[in-house]
Image 1 (cartoon, rainbow, N blue to C red):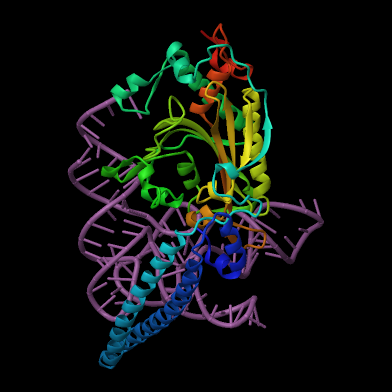
Image 2: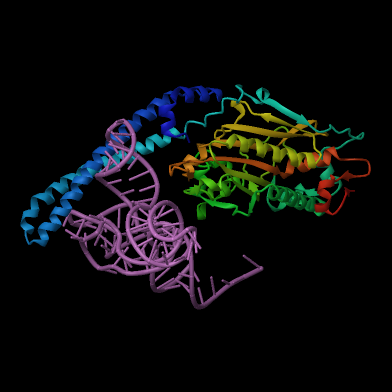
Length: 423
RNA sequence: GGAGAGAUGUCCGAGUGGUUUAAGGAGCACGCCUGGAAAGUGUGUAUACUUCAAAAGGGUAUCGCGGGUUCGAAUCCCGCUCUCUCCGCCA
């Protein structure tokens, strides 16, 4: 969420940036500032009452030691009055803080001024495009038929054992999954990312800190008996590593990579173009997360963007990069690049990665800070990106590389698969 | 799942109702000493909110978390979380 000092000191800029996301409820800003004034005033009054009570308690202690307990009676009465007062003030203070918080979570992150204005995916800006568009043989098949033809995945079996959107991968299909995971992890480690393997269940505090709660609760699978949630992305546990932390400035940027299963209920989003691997409830993803200095977080965003582009180059997939417009960006992002690979048989661009800078929007809620050279403590910037999500990569690999002899595996992946062709 | 023990600052660790304004030690930072270092020595060393034009200084809260008792709680009471030991189960 946004910080109150930012809203207070840069209100015009804040409004201008929010308008890029087509946000219009600017009255929330003034409401928050008014409540914050009340919070300060209330706290001051409460603190004064507490200070007087503390002072009286010391006096009572002294009197008792001197054997003058009787003289303490009026002081005790005064403390009782103060206690009533601090009860009322304290409750109001908590109430005001709750109100401020409830309004803050209704305001999205402020987009970077470079973010194009717009409402839908059609307004996204194509910033680069590379790779050779494949020429497919006649009777080219979409990936769901290829999965079936070469016995790489079994959706029916998934339906039987779990439900729709939970396929089994089998044989070379399973091996291809494992190869891609290892390939992505090795590439990230070679690029300086520190590998972690996170839990795939998180507690409420973690889900709240990265913003899945309270807004996106319906998107997560929950384990209510233990008050836990299945992660929709490794971003959640990995970013939460840094919750309530003060890191050293010299440690920045902190580059972390994690592979995990991801679980998404995708409530209400089933419809067109979700066949096969295009949309699943459980999928695999390698995620990169960075904690960066505010001075160079956008340089880090470009570096992450390049890391992802290199993966796609090595996989020899045609792709383009979009800078998302305000209307298509996520609530929490300040700037997002989406990567889409061309899935030749479906004749579709498939989103395989989303790389974002959140500035302080996440770290404010996380309480993720660093101490600068002068000893001042300030919020760090967070960034993350998929590098990469597997199912749509598999879809594009299968469709684009199909030949009459079988499906060719890109060279970079062959050491990981142990085979050059699927037939 | 059962029984017991525990959680104090960067770390170790003392503290069972009032100069604890959290002892002491270690670490770290800076200074002195030194040709340089070690040793020695001195000073400093949490976070959040708030007050103040700013700095300095001050106030409040925080001893796992949340309540309660009391004029006063790290200390007493209740609930929760987590850790350790033993038992049970187990890849």
